[in-house]
Length: 64
Image (cartoon, rainbow, N blue to C red; front, side, top):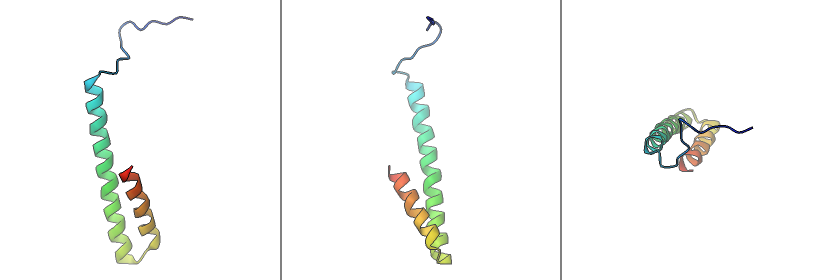
């Protein structure tokens, strides 16, 4: 079964998509970092090792 590509492209030079992806990545990085800071503060204030461990996990997520 053949299909047509008429009317849309699969081009890798779609600058608009690249900019949207960069913006989405920046937003997610900002949210992850915000939660990371909140978990560090909460972990230190409450003495919760679980929050500090999760903050370390989020730090590795942010770094990657």
